[in-house]
Amino acid sequence: MKTAIDRLIDKIKEMDNPTVIGLDPRYDMLPECIKSKYGTDLRDVCRAIIEYNYKLIDSVCDIVPAIKPQIAFYEMFGTYGIEAFCETCRYAKHKGMIVIADMKRGDIGTTAQAYSNAAIGKTPVAEMNYAIYDIDFVTVNPYLGTDGIKPFVEDCKKYNKGIFVLVKTSNQSSGELQDLRLEDGKTVYEKVAELVNMWGEDLVGEYGYSSISSVVGATYPKQLEELRKIMPTSYFLIPGYGAQGGKADDIALGFDENGLGGIVNASRSLMCAWKSDKWKDVYTDEQFAEATRAEAIRMRDELNGAIKSK
Image (tube, rainbow, N blue to C red; front, side, top):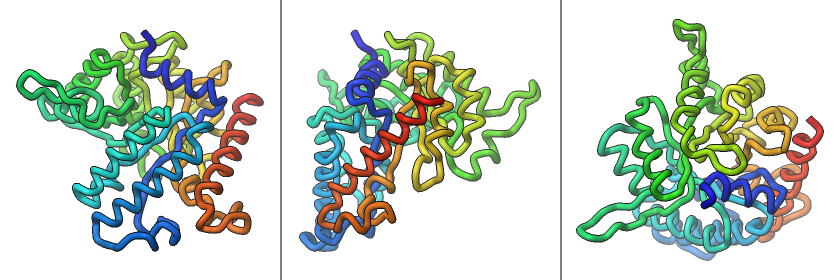
């Protein structure tokens, strides 16, 4: 049986595209052609978000292997937002895409198990087990150590799912904690990388990568290159491309000699492509989905060029 990471890599290879579209909607981000159809109460806003997401998914599902919805951008709209999150995930899976939910869950014991049940496992009720979000991958925070990760690892094994563990994140202040030196001279992120190796050793698939993988930001290319050596079986979810400043040539350092090893996220630069300097004179807001597709193709080609020439 193929592992979760094998299924993701199959999609990446099928489409020759190591990218994931982040779906992080805000009301002010929606094009007027969508907003004008709906009111501004929370239910209508979330209906607008669903339509927006559907059209974005339709525009790229044949060229982009995965979506990465950040749940915070749905939770802020309350229960209607959670419905929009679920509908977005369901629709993307219906269209054949892999779903990587950006939840950054982190807790211990029964709480960690409950988080895992909702995201990648099942919730037991009497004689039934219910798949709640039923996504393919979820991001997790390792700050609480093995106690916080173990329930997710067990559910990955039981339900053939995957996780991406935060190792070196793309934000500017990540070094305040992640770059600190330990007594043995290693940084905190290097220690986390070693733990990821240990947590994932039983879930290595046919491509040599584990379904217990890692988040490594595009904005720190030196660390990206170092971590590829430290974590040879870890697939990298790489945020920070585009709006955050990550460059294709830097990102290529996280890939192996076969052109595998990472999937690169872009959110705003894809969702709002029609507003960007590159496309605003080409596409109107009513053509927002076409602009997203054009930017997705441009991003794919730029990354592939950098990966193949490194």
